[in-house]
Amino acid sequence: MRLTREQAAAKVMVALDKPDAETALRLADALHGTGCWMKVGMELFYAAGPSVVRELKARGFKVFLDLKMHDIPNTVRGGARSITRLGVDMFNVHAAGGSAMMGAAMQGVEDALGEGDADEKPIVIAVTQLTSTSLAVLNEEIGIAGTVEQAVVNYAKLAASAGLRGVVASPLEVEAIKLACGPEFLTVTPGIRPRGSDIGDQSRITTPGDAVRGGTDYLVIGRPITGAPDPAVSLQSILEEMSAS
Ligand code: C5P
Image 1: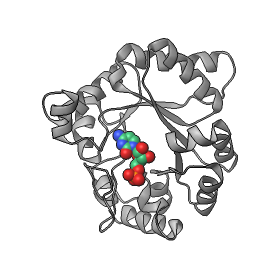
Image 2: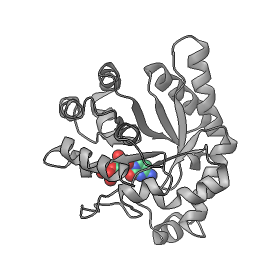
Image 3: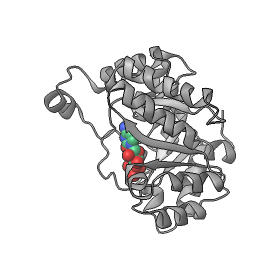
């Protein structure tokens, strides 16, 4: 099924990896009205704090807060409660923290909702294996045996059993994840590179068109848009590629 431009835009999460609120909001304003999500990660959040999330929400963007929490369950529960109160639409934890930690994140969401401090229930997803991780790094540095895909699927199954709605993974692993966890289990995929663009530090990559054809639910795209001379033009050509898939 072909995507309309609106459907394509609703699947794109622009990684606002910028060092200050002013630069990030200027970029967001350039993409206003397109219907895409904004992803706030460590670089921006640690510099600008919760107010930048509120600014983006006030502008009507859906926000994915990508802070990849990984700590003891009690701390993650408190973190998830604070994030839910902030009103984000999606946030994440590391699956490597285990099922008790992921369950604590879900509990933190319920805490905030139960206290009446939040209106919306955010989608909670787990990071599986970072898309910058190669097989050699997985096996030799991190010490996990087997293929990257096996590690990712194990993490995805763990996240699903802990009640999370989906995972962050490479687009190359979407088929295996959907097979293991069901078609409704969400896949959020960074490592997207339009043909001819710079790979940067990503390792397991694919094009926007191939990601859509592979069944990805959300495409996280940073530097190909945020580093382009005209980010809005770059986004439009990515949307065209997605809706031609
Ligand atoms: O610039 P680029 O398109 O590589 O940005 C990808 C974004 O997705 C970055 O913000 C990065 O932190 C994030 N990400 C990732 N791999 C993961 C999880 C998140 O690249 N597994």
